[in-house]
Length: 406
Image (tube, rainbow, N blue to C red; front, side, top):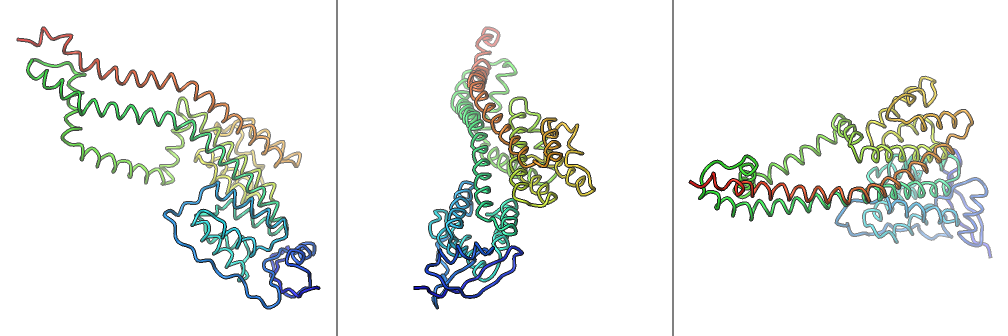
């Protein structure tokens, strides 16, 4: 027996409509409304009230990882494709989210959508959770009536970015661990071993070699002024972090990153992979080109590459091609500018960008594998060199002990 349902939907122009329709179930009504060209917002059976807001307990952190957002997008797309309304899908996702911050955010988004707001507008109220890339693609999906496809594409893009981030972390974890290990060894030697040699050399008299004097002086500072050293280190770290967040500081640091002897190429290819992947996703989703370039610049991850993209945006606004300001710039390899140019001319820009993104993803993976095998013996040499230099500095006076004894 057919039941009367009340509904709220949005058409392809984003206009909100509501009314009543008969059907056997909520899913069948949602399917019929989608076939009519509408995006279901909420469907209620009879006089049943809407969904109640969830009560959640605040978590210990406000951070929502890219993996959380990617999983949310994948599940959201599946539910929309299965015929669930936006309100119902968001309610389910809010209930099953393991991250408390994400759960509270999705609940707030669901409430806004239930009150008549568009999904992209509701998401834009939470910029710390949903990026400008995410909001722009959802807005394009709403306008094109293909929200489920856009959400799947978003999930794939975010998963690719998370994978790229894991590759970089795996490349940086081993050197960071070795540097920390060496620092602990050197600190232990300065605190416990150098003072023993200092007492022994004090009874000999004479002038100690310069490396030994430097080592003893460093030991004295660490023993008697460790609190001052810690304060200076913390203040310097905080000051550097704040300066790095400024536009000028970020540009200088990113430029230095690209000039590093071992990791410079890795950082450069990572930025290019992010840029081309995001550019491809936005282009394929139908986001306007100026907004696409703006978002691609803000998410490239390197200010040097981002500056070239912003210059290209200004050129496009003047009627120039995308690659007009990229050609000849050392931050953008000829391969990138040439393939983008071919994509513009052939009308397959998104496909060319996808190929570029896949190419640079594979390049990053290959570099990480090569660096892992290269860094192991190199770091062993650094550890041995640091400890060996300290030991030699301690024993230099013994080599000259006859001159020191009166």
